Length: 146
Image (cartoon, rainbow, N blue to C red):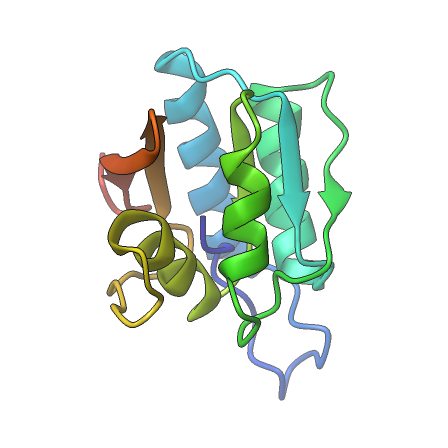
């Protein structure tokens, strides 16, 4: 997923979540909870806005899961290594990162290359599922979707 809406770097160079971003992620977490989503692992890039997003989701959806920083999730990182790593995992995971990384990771998993960009907005969750050797997009939730 892409982190929630963040304040402009002219306001705070660390770019924490804005109040709108917090509200959006809390609403998304509530939706995930009502859908029965279960997560075994939550990873984030280490940037404050991604870490805050991961923490909100963990608190509401998977309180026993401690979000962890994972290298290779920054905006312009190559998604190939992460794609291989998560392809080996059997558990449900959440990755909280940034654009264009999230878009390129989805493209890599779904199309085999990272050239296709998905349009989204902060706080968008892409739900992918692995079937055999292939991935499929099973859903997408935007923060403005009620």
